[in-house]
Image 1 (cartoon, rainbow, N blue to C red):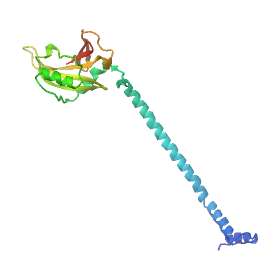
Image 2 (cartoon, rainbow, N blue to C red):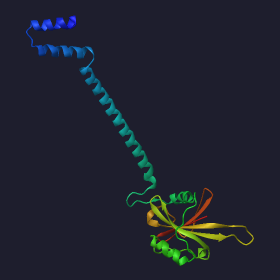
Image 3 (spheres, one colour):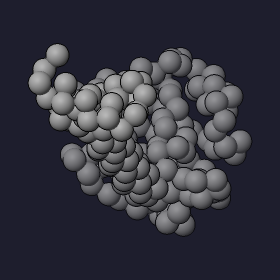
Image 4 (cartoon, rainbow, N blue to C red):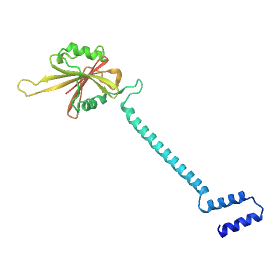
Length: 212
């Protein structure tokens, strides 16, 4: 037993304290001297508090990122019954053909193509323009335009006699009710974008676009 411990024990013995009380006092003294239980408890509280603040910070960043993402999508994607800008059609077509797309329905029977598009939800009163009927068909597809469908049919047009090669003509049909700021007459509205030419016109509730 150290001299200090003996002095402490003798001091409390002189005060008639039970031995258990003396040992408890000694233990508390050792803990305080070594920065033990009491300090550790405080450190744990500090660590837990810092961890909690870090978690709240990460949650805040995630929520902020979600708000920014939703704000960006709001312009392009309709909510409920809202429409989207018709101007979004042309860049979506350019993007769609950026890589060779799959055209699941292929047939040279234009009536069969028309029936397939109707089965995919195309407007009941839409018709393939008469000038396209003699052309070779390359297939049909439904293109998602930021949440609204556009029904696509592709045709091959030969160049005039004496000219080399040919070109694909893409017919896209959409419902007027799905878009805003659409053409309002049969007179085609022409637009150029990224090397593409677009001509759009209206026939009743159906909006047609030829893209070449």
